[in-house]
Image (tube, rainbow over all chains, first blue to last red; front, side):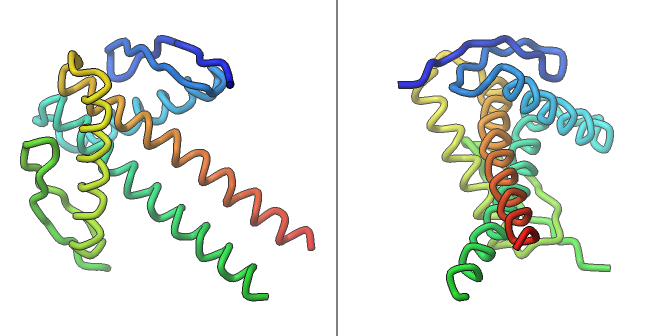
Length: 82
Length: 82
């Protein structure tokens, strides 16, 4: 079993404890992306409450995730066709 | 310019207006993933407030996103090497 690490990251001014199996540098990178994402959405919608901001950040990121995942699957399909 | 659509989705019991260029079925699929993600994290951490829940959902999904993106880039690199 791989080792689970626990690190504290700051996202949008608040500390969160994240538990994961990844390197701490990777978790920090992820937290940084979420932080930047929230700040960008906040800039465009300064009246949003922080929960909505966080939910919409998750929505945006899942959207990007699905696009990349579909691209990857399409590529795998093409490789298998050859 | 592509058409922007506005739809209302329900995530973790709250309605959110999402604006996007994607089909509404795609946006609903994304909202569904976020909703499920939040419910899963909530099950494991019932004491978390909803903002933290949403932030950690974003963190989890960005983590998956980076992994898939790296896999995609690695695959593209291999294809170009051939």
